[in-house]
Length: 241
Image 1 (cartoon, rainbow, N blue to C red):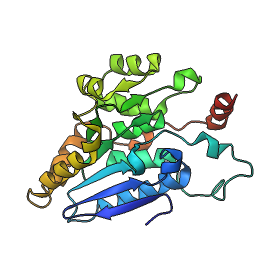
Image 2 (cartoon, helix red, strand yellow):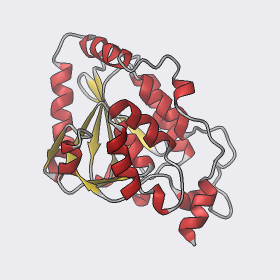
Image 3 (cartoon, rainbow, N blue to C red):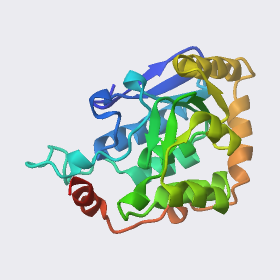
Image 4 (cartoon, rainbow, N blue to C red):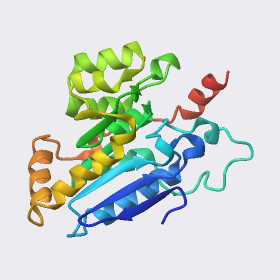
């Protein structure tokens, strides 16, 4: 069990639970490190056929925790090798097991990219996705990378240039979510899907996901996900101001 997340193992599948509900499950480096480690651990367990990614408290992910980035004094993990969002996305990209996202309430900015990383995304009826960096003058490296795989330039342009809230039913129409269900049924539906996948022969989901990953024609994930000079603190200052 991590400090900011938990792993819950079930019969043939597991859940990675982001456990920062007091901050709407926003991302900080040690949380990203815990998710990365959890992916690496679970994908190598033969009995695990799929992984559910969800947030505690009925929230998916509100993005990067800008308040934590500008905290004074800095948090104890600041400046330490505790994990990073880019490495987390590389782990999600390369995961050997299918990832099922429980998209509750919202996925904003970096939270939207986390949703795009899922192979199956179950959205709540009133949940919304938002790529809102345009409002802060910030870039969208992880969202752009995932959308190159998952959708089209015109859909990304609609999301990123409008910067608005896109509700669950529209996410399905855009091909970005698999299903839209009642808000209180999102996690249950994800578990139903996980149970179904677990009912197939052992190793079947890993074989299928290997074929799906191969269609991406991306040999080097490290080169695919962009490295950038961090403008997170600048963005935090813009938001604060």
